[in-house]
Image 1 (cartoon, rainbow over the protein chains, first blue to last red):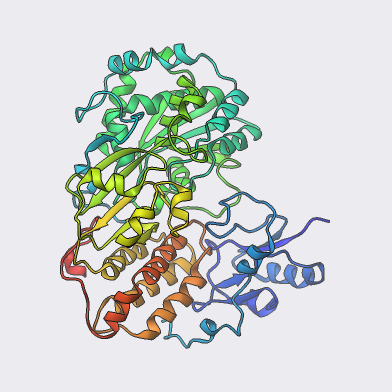
Image 2 (cartoon, rainbow over the protein chains, first blue to last red):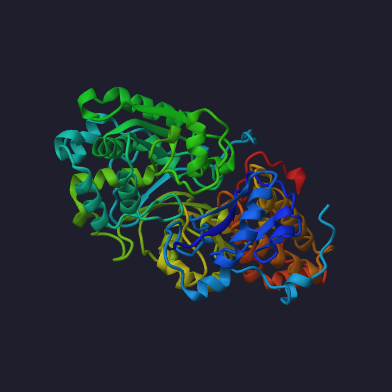
Length: 109
Length: 438
């Protein structure tokens, strides 16, 4: 069983925000309401939630398939390969407990 | 789309020759196209006679042994890219990418204007080895277009195996130089990047596997085919052999395009160019690059490995020396604001995030508005924007902002106290950015 990943096509996404509502385990919204998705593979027990989020995306921007998401810059370019654990940590979403996350920002409008 | 209305850096850029063995800039030193007769007598005849027909696997092996990497900025292995295109089925397309939309870069334009035959040789080798259906050459300016067109007229048809080269004037917008954007441009659409994967070598021009390489890479490829990979490895470092073109601008008495062996000490290049001894800082890697302080110059080496320790990268070989008494934070803000306006507006994090970043950086750059919270906001938004666009545009901007925050922390602290070291105007070149905007 090969692993599956959740990705978003940022050129299609307009920030409806349903994915964060339906799949908070993997998706959270940035300060402008666009989804930030965890880069690591989706575990099997979350497949149902992932499929539901994908099916509910009004912009059809969510992808849930075998293609791993692109790595951040400096992490070996565009070669799809094995990730080490340190890199994985970096790819994970910012945690709510991190101080930068709780900084009150100005209204993005 | 922002069409450049002011004269650009590349309109004035001069070739300053090579520091060390010259390869791309060897030959006549006049500021004009090298003629076909000069080119073929200097390099030993037409490329088809000198090389003959190369099998694709042969080419990949040769390039792999040569260790050639892409000179467009990402530094991806050319052999890997070639092999990836070859693995695909169906007719192939080759694109020589000389769109060079970075305002501080002039090397591709200069190469196409002075040595078009080197690039055409490289294209001929790649196109015939891949049995390409179509070959495109994207050029940055009308002068380069004329130079390449004249060069094509000089060559005999049998000197150019493979499909005829189609010369196309490149897109004017900054993100248009990215490979998927160039392919879209060649298809007749606006030059905006698309979501990847699939990458260009899987599905590129009209769905065909497409090899997109910088024109400098292609020129090196042609020389490797002629003289072999051992010859190519004769210069440069073991990991990154060969030479590269560097566009040097800013507070130097001899700005222009230099050909340097990879691994050259940065101070050697600066010494050759006559630098401002009191220079404030140096931007390496172009507008997606990183700042170095004068204290870091002696440790810097012009190579990926040598700059990585300093948190920088050579990128597409753009180096700008910032004049003394210039506020680098303010300069960064000018660039970031321009880059934010150059977003294609396709991806939310880039379209929303970059203007927000530019606005907050403007506050920090202004000594009367700088606030501690601004730095935290910038860091937070950098994390949120990074790696969230279809192309690397937002990541490049984030890299520049992070480098500004890390390198000029003391200057930013000064701004918090309503002071600033900057007095002079510097000239990080930006097209169509009137001074009144600042």
